[in-house]
Image (cartoon, rainbow over all chains, first blue to last red):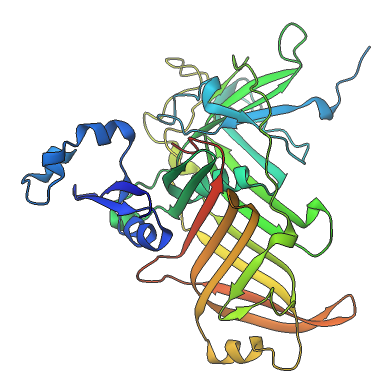
Length: 59
Length: 346
């Protein structure tokens, strides 16, 4: 299993993805950026869940 | 009286990005690298005068005004894993860091405002020093610089000069003198020599067929310099309207990528056919020091814009200009840089 990084889209969709170029590049082109360590701390496990509700909570 | 020779020049610049255009890097966010060119990044003060104003009774100037500041510079270096990672991250604008020491991986792509990205590039500070301290000759820091473009040149031959990178940068105009920065120890770089090249363009492995002679690839941001001066963009000395305006933003313009190469041309070479048929494919070039230090650049869709048969040192060669195009999935270009330095463009 490769290392994972946490990306967030402009509209707040958070994804944990493998740190491989073939995975990262298409997402980066679509506007996803890496969460900073500080931002990652603010994203709780519950909020990471896909059905957690308001994506604004992720910001 | 002693002279000051250019060999004394030391530079350091932001390994990490600035918090914003106006906030300079601190010393711990910087690294010192060596360079090959002597050119200095001189702050340039632009002035105007009142010669054309009516009411003076003559056509001659009576006053001069500080209007604005420019800073630009060029770094020429032997290509290393470290500066390669830095140039890709700051030059393309978006980076994802992964890995741990000694194998940090920086995956970089250009910023795409249509996908919600900013149009401002990451900022860094650039310091030049010659004998800083009591006997100072030069000690200044340009704040709010961005990478205007980079060019990587790979040639044939045994020396380090066959693998070089040139990085052009432009600044907001803000500078600090003296810099207040204690020059960090020089970073030991892992060079990426020409002999390590792996190259595949449009379906042809130009290294395994031993045909590649040279190549050059580049990226240019065409930064909107005048757009940095907007109402309220600020002054060299905050609150002093006579100190000259500085830029409050540096946004890229219409960006351009290039890839051109020269290869031996022989029976079965496909460059002319691919030009006529406008065949498209990827172009991947990789340079490696070891498993922890490398640079791989991928142009995700290229066709040949021109292919001209000529000669190099008496050998028949073909000179090809590629046209990098937009790929719906992967965009225009991406770079994967590995090195042992943490925090680049973070």
